[in-house]
Image 1: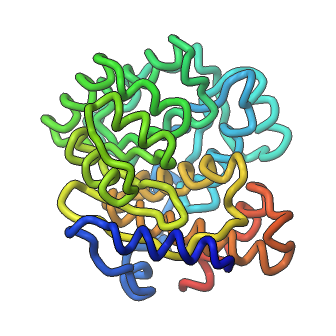
Image 2: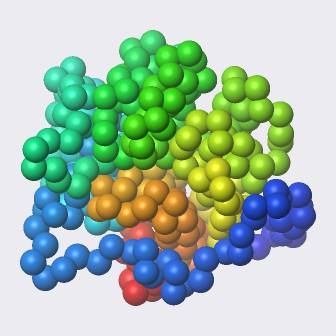
Length: 306
């Protein structure tokens, strides 16, 4: 690990808010990991709907959906544009795909016979695209299941409609998770009138303002539910490439789909994501690791925890 990264982590720890807790032990992480029982089936292991990708960023949708499969979701469905669906079908034939034009957010409302379900929306969205913003707002407004917002989808949260949708979700008790990196977090803070540049404080303040569990991605990643801030210290520079955040979004969403508590899902997902990056760097070198490699080493990281 570079001395620069060490310095950044030390600074983050020194400046962290008073609610900062100690990092989780492997025992705590292991307790949070959903291990399927002998009588499990694909629906009992959770349905994950990944609403992601665009013509410009189709790969993000594929990475998030594949991560959802590897993290244990029993039925992962990719809802996206034609380009992303074609890529997904070629790379991962077991993924169920469908057109975003046929998607109705009302599908995410609990039915008479509820099944475990979660939605991941935003990886690969273009932040300035009006239709994408409207889709994020629609999902947040209508879904009663847990919803994770990532990537370009985060841009919708700073607008008036996004703020109202988050307020409604908080009022009815629907779980929301957001996964910004520090740059995206700062933009959200600006739109919400929050003044801080410290990632730990940013995670706490954004959680208080939005009602969401916040996973603030940085050299030290912070998870906050507005009451506490949990640091995850195991990151690696191997993850500092476009696309690794899409993998993390799919992982955490899959845990939500399996019924894992949002804070537990955030800390566990971030830790396994970091460990997969470390495992990949051991085999490939910190320079050469790609998001696809993180996917490939994710089962190794999970097994090492077990």
